[in-house]
Image (cartoon, rainbow, N blue to C red; front, side, top):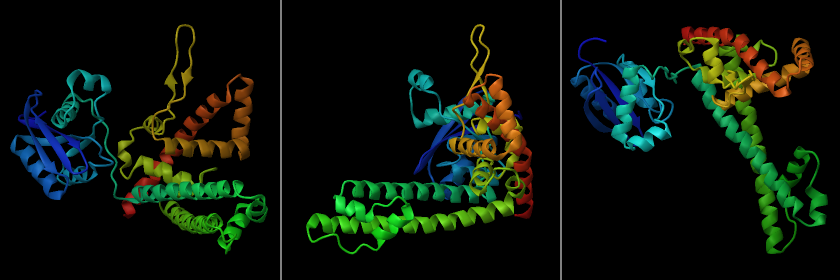
Length: 349
């Protein structure tokens, strides 16, 4: 550490950010609250530099409220590190305030506890993440629309059920979308309008999903070609895995880092004479689900994976343990491909 180097810690919020600067020996030099905009970010940076030589900063929420600040700091060649909020035990013993949290963020950088490099949000990975977010919400809303329509039909009279409740979803939606009148009573008029609106909503969301799927297919073929070539990896799963890796793949030091990020790194669950591992329920759950999907496809259709499952079953492993192993092996297989695809994407950007 060079002489007179200082550390900046920032507790981020929607409208304001609170920064704290400490010296190289951990002494608090001051705190400052700024607005969460470009002018506020520059004010915070200028203030921190006035107290010493600033090279590193710990920022909470670099993927949410702190994203804008993190970009400004990186543009000024400040190393930005992601800082997790203090655990509950520490909060109970030391209290909670924004300046306190900012000071703790700075001390996490000084002590070396904060080592996570935040994701950059400016390339193909961020584009895939944005489309995946929109697709996930559209799919959820589409499912809700069809469930609500079915619930209304199930509670309707027998005549209406027989007329509109079909086994195939497309036929049922088409019938409700063409619906004109179920009767003249207020209840039947309201039911007619509601069923028609829910059907039109489902059709609109179906068109939206087709558009989003086309966007994901194009993005992954262009920026994740190696990943798409692997068995069981489709546009949605490829997009999720690339998005969780981020546009700066150098932050992933090893395949173990990616496995931990996806919640597939085995955790020790040994005690006494029992030596075993258990599932990791941390990490990014959407990435974990993408690996689960790939594993399921391979268990059904890939001869090599089917042979592995059969061998492991004979050895006495449970389905959960086999699935955990498969997801970890898939990460090992896909890790170098993700790095290569992201590197190509960065060079062509």
